[in-house]
Length: 189
Length: 192
Image 1 (cartoon, each protein chain N blue to C red):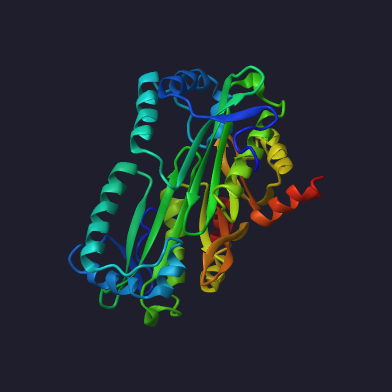
Image 2 (cartoon, each protein chain N blue to C red):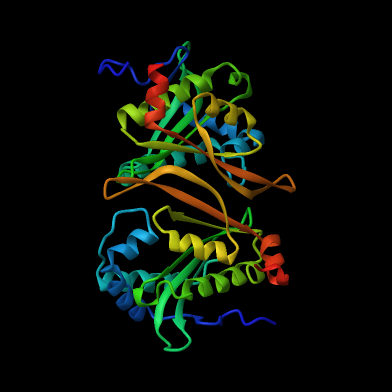
């Protein structure tokens, strides 16, 4: 059987609320990180507020529609990012949110390795029919990485975002279970 | 056209108005017993809902309107007798990006195919662009809802996204579409 939690560069972990809050405060200083990850206004949250939020998630226990993980590098054992899968249990679809907070690790293949683990988990453990995600036009690095992972561009909502007074499209991507299986069987380009 | 005296909520045969907590729950409860209506409106599972459940939902909805400040809800009424015939929303508004999502439904079968949807969508787009000043609006429509697709296209909405096989209904997979209309395109059409 596959190792679900270990890629070539990173591994999936579960971190304590204290650790997640501490590192999140550090990541939130980076405006670009927020703007790449989200469409809403950048904001700063206190370590206390973040810790309580992570603690509350733990108290609520595992929910069948939400899978949230931290990610560490294999080489340095450093906590560099996260991904979350939200499930639509009725239509058997997962939405992915993924991020590397520490910009030292941008553009070096860590994100692509994380996405590989994420898709493997979604398709072979959660058994969804499709995985979806959204991103912004001003994030071409993410677009390339997601295409490499097998996602197809399914459309763009035109001029959806306003950043620094300019309008940008929102991009919508998806990958079907069959498409992912074909990639695993060696059709990978 | 953009005169300040324009009545935003008065169409030819229909008007947009607030919820009537006394009269509406009974009527909307009837609509929820029509699985076709539910499947056209929602992607969550269709289920019949009693008047009491609808009443609770209205209360929740009004609370949500107050707290979230990014949601507008209208009851659609026939002008001839003020009866409830449908509902419409502008929702999930992102104020900093100037975008939002619109949705409308005509509840009972005998009120459909009479042009009411057209009148509502005309008011709803005008409200979104000339009152809320949104830059663009989106609409999410399952590929099997051909009436809605035709209606939104008639108003200049373009198919922007096709989420392949995103819905599982009636034993098969269906695409879920996103249509979009820009304020600038709407103004050009309104002026034409």
